[in-house]
Image 1 (tube, rainbow, N blue to C red):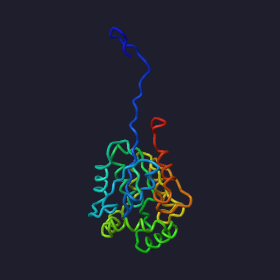
Image 2 (image 1 turned 180 degrees about the vertical axis):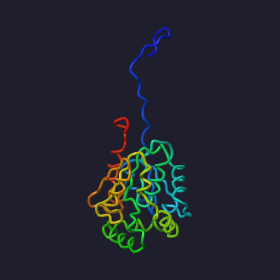
Image 3 (image 1 turned 180 degrees about the horizontal axis):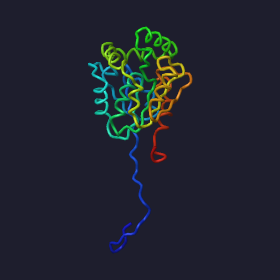
Length: 235
């Protein structure tokens, strides 16, 4: 505090204000920003579409996809949110950039048991029948926009990758969120990912299946808000 005559006295230390946390969402396989529209009515967030995830474009490696995500992520601190197949991109990106202060994986893939075509189709159908049918036109419109070629290419790139191995390099909190009716992300697979992450936790949404950003936006928003360090001044 300045005094008359140019002197100073010591006052209370000033704690620098933490910049607000931003939420950055990456759509799942074949999906685009419409998949998180209801979620974004509950909290502000930036959507970053990528090839196979909202963009009908050639799909590069996971490493290049992560680089493109980081290029478009903006200033930190950021809570990075992946859904389904984009969780694998989020895991790679989170291990590389200090702007990421937490990661949320919504229905993460790919369980190694689902890498065969038969296993994938069987569990996809089991999950689809547990989803609300009002979603069908919305999902179909997003798949049409992204296109089957980009979707298939993303699957070929991402499915063989070991998500649990990637998470071992992520040093920030990792929250895995799954619906209790999700057969693409089963409980034991989600628990395996949580165990792999140095700072992992599992949250399960009763009655939800795989499309949690669309079907349970309020519950997902509550999980995301619980990760905002602003009220306590940091994690």
